[in-house]
Amino acid sequence: MKNNIIIMKMTDAYEYQSFLNEKENIITIDCRNVSGTRCYLDDEAKVKIRNLISAYSPSGIHFIDSGNYHYLTLLWLEKIDTDFNLILFDHHPDNQPPSFGQITSCGGWVLESTDTLPHLKQVFTFGVGQDPDINDIPTNLPIYISIDKDILSTDYAITDWDQGDMTVPELINYLFNLFNSRDLIGVDICGDSGEMAIDGACINNQINQTLFDFLSNFF
Image 1: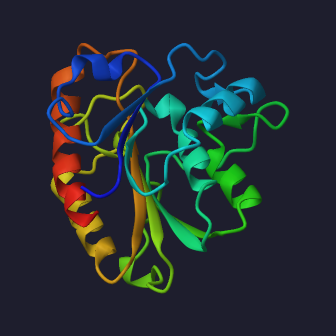
Image 2 (image 1 turned 45 degrees about the vertical axis):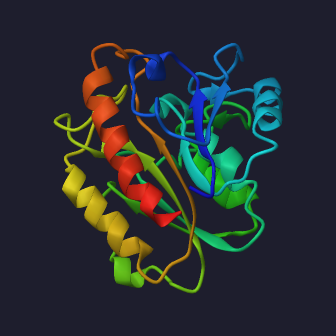
Image 3 (image 1 turned 90 degrees about the vertical axis):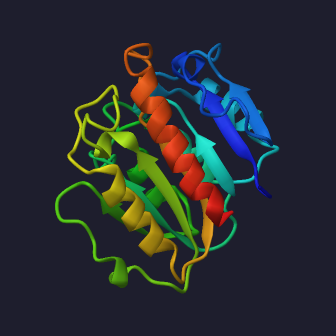
């Protein structure tokens, strides 16, 4: 695989999974000792995490732990220096204004991205209301894909949030059709369970393995 496989440890969730044990080119970024990160990312923590990922490209596959840390997508998107569209798979829109100040949050990072990133042209969200028609997503710009596994039913993932009803075959089909005639910059995946890491380890390990095996064909 030409691009990096990055796993960002924000909780102990990946300690109970084996899906990356025998993979090559894995980079582990351990952020568990960085305070000020759960659901909200304070300014000091943002600087620390930016420094931790500063050497790495937004291309490749990034596993970014629980949905409580979905705002990490924003920090990867900041690295993209060409116009692009964001494709989001999520049971929540993550476009809420901050509850206080201008702090980055797992529920507002999409709004912050659209407000602050000049290269981000459009966001297409699957899993909230009516899904967009893939044929309406332009092919003239590359795409970055962010997947929160809470879009899946509890038959396929155990997350820290309420979940949707999408199946894995449906998600894979969406991804396959998106990649047709569109350049792919990178993908990140969250929705592991920090709060139920042991209980969810088996099923989350399986879906992470499935997504990795599929996505690695496109890098």
